[in-house]
Structure formats: C-alpha cells, structure tokens
Length: 90
Image (cartoon, rainbow, N blue to C red; front, side, top):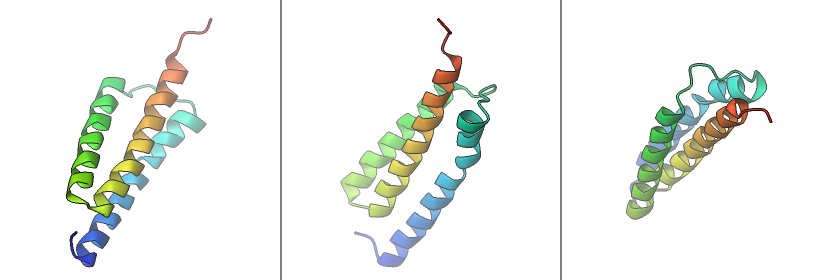
C-alpha cells in the first residue's frame, strides 16, 4: 500500500471528482432535464471507472477503490435518471 500522504492525495482527488458530478445529478434527478446527455458516453465513462476500480483492487489502494466506487455510483445515477426520463410513456 502507498504511503499515507499518497493515499490522502488520492482521496482528495476522488472527492473532487465526485463533487464534480453533483450538478449533473441535480439536472437529471431534481430538474428532470436530460437534453445533451449522451448515454453511450456516460456508459463508456462507467466502463473506465470499473477498470480503474479493478486496478485499485489489484494494487490494494483504498483511495482508488473508494473514489471509483463513489464516481461509479454518481455516473450510474445519471445514466438511470436519463433512461427513466427518456423511456416512452405507455
């Protein structure tokens, strides 16, 4: 495992990365706006986050694991919110 200060930098970066998604989550879930959001692009970002999560697990880095789990939760929330808003009404 990396030195504590290295993990703390990783945690800080992870928190910033998660905070960056909060306005997008608000747009989708609270304001119910989804225009301009590309589900395939967000799917690709989610795939990259899964790969980073696996990498973090393999190297046993708590900061990489936690940051990518949190970011994956945000991205998944956005994807599911957009799909919910775009589904055809029956």
